[in-house]
Amino acid sequence: MTLKVPCPQCQKEVVWQASSEFRPFCSERCKLLDLGEWADESNKISEPIQVDSAISQEMLDAIEDDILLNNNFFVEPE
Image 1: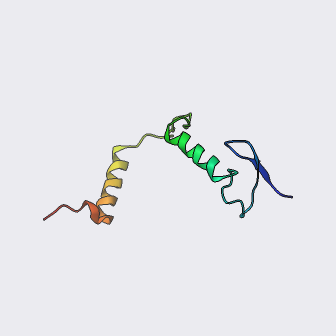
Image 2: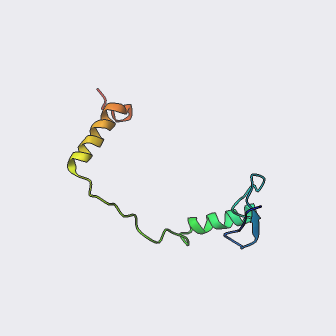
């Protein structure tokens, strides 16, 4: 059985396979139109990201220590 999905832009049927270069879009044009809508902020994620727990000061300190120990980008000049 061949899976067919509608193009998110024009609703044309697209065969879902490796040879479908622009899947889930039917063409490069539809892909670029969709990208343009995201760039214009016509499309957006409707719900804000929800965090299950608050980040404590201890967690922030641990992250900062890890970054300072493992990342030379933040090394202060001598």
